[in-house]
Figure (cartoon, rainbow, N blue to C red):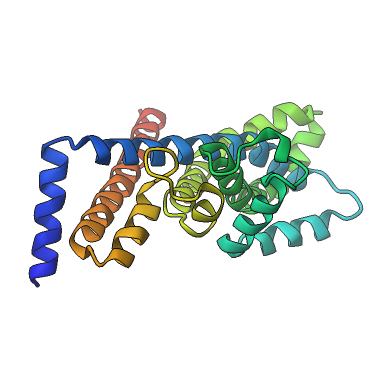
Length: 235
């Protein structure tokens, strides 16, 4: 019980005092996760829309691959990215190993299958519902895609949040390609792992509480956006 009380006390002190190290870690965590999420979304949602409305040879196989990749072990992704961006790898000339850029690449690979697979399922259901109507009125594919996205914006926002949750909570891949270097690549999850291994459970739990609080805030904001959008439609 005292460990939990110490954790809450430590978290409160760190937040109230606006501890510089804590703010640096939190900011890097958010920056890396949001960057990864935006990149994955820019590629993921169009791919999901394409797979949902187009029929072509190999489509089922591609969907099955993305579905399978949703459960990829993060450490395996971290290892693959490490081999690619290491000095002897094909992208070694970029010299981004043990930098936030390598961490972003790893997180994009982890988030992309989630966005593609889930958006495909949602948009495919809408396509089945609207396909005949759109054919009758000769609706262009681009207009159809925008309509699907607009009608399923709440569900797509949930997918977006799922991607953010995957990114912000990731530790296995980012610790391999980032190296958990202080003031360079140390994020909240890797700091928690480090402090736990050092036996500083109070600080580790404190950071965990802050991480949960951050996730809660994001979900509350998303819920507020959903309720506001519904209120606007009903009004």
